[in-house]
Length: 186
Image 1 (cartoon, one colour):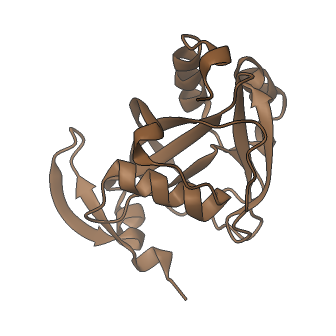
Image 2 (image 1 turned 180 degrees about the vertical axis):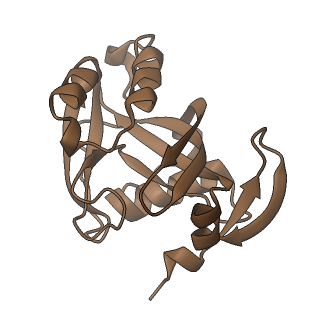
């Protein structure tokens, strides 16, 4: 079985300059900067897909989260990792040219057992609401669509049911406010 704590990650300084590679467990224990990929799926109605993290997850089990996300293994590009995570977690295979880069987000999280200093590369992928998903049960136990304009309100009302991505959500909503949703699905 794959041991994610021994997965090698590229380590960076705060400005994004590569320093070295290190096991994921060391990266979190020492609070080293590393990269993650985040993919937001959006449909023709202006809804974003949320995933409900599996109760088996060690961090933030049984909480609503970004459509798809993951650590970027050493040597991988953010786009390669985003494409792979989307297929693994949700069973959705999308060509790389359908990923729209939205923004990079840096925000440290100080938890009980680790310090997570992520440089998150955030992408948008447009899919029809009728897309069929195949959930990776060890990662995702449920999914749901929510209109992007309702996301923050739902987050504030049900904060204990969400991974605390408040600033990510705010940036996402700012980006999505500029899209014409009737033209999203190709």
